[in-house]
Length: 216
Image (cartoon, rainbow, N blue to C red; front, side, top):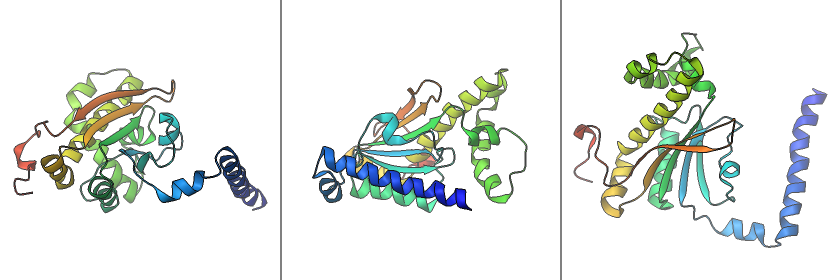
């Protein structure tokens, strides 16, 4: 117990040091931060602690509106994700929505197995298994396991962007304001670089017209 307390108290101590340094650099830093939030970007990323959105894009707090979950999924019944998306698009008026996965993703690796991860994780990972099923021919042709996992990371990001395009939230903004642009990226843990793999905008066709809302 003593070690646990010491660990989290270190976080509080580091916070105090960080806040003091920010004020030293700019006495009005927190005043400006508290008064203004006008991000151009919504970031839908993985919960993995190695992929902090602001740090890997070298941006400041207030520049990116962030939602994170296991394997950066866009699920049409996820009220948490949809509330973030609606707030970002309807009220913050973001110009870009980015789905960013990462190579070496534990969620991707787990979904490629037949292991029982118990009910809740099984339900979540099934969404990734569905991506695998859609792209099974391509993925099964890849014999190197790491390359297969990397490719599924890319395909998963693409599918999540397609899921965004199916929402009335995005379609309404596209129809009336011709924004936001949707991006699918994958971050490399080994080199720190982001690879763009897919994008859509207001002129992009739906994969199937059944997903179009005509009376927005």
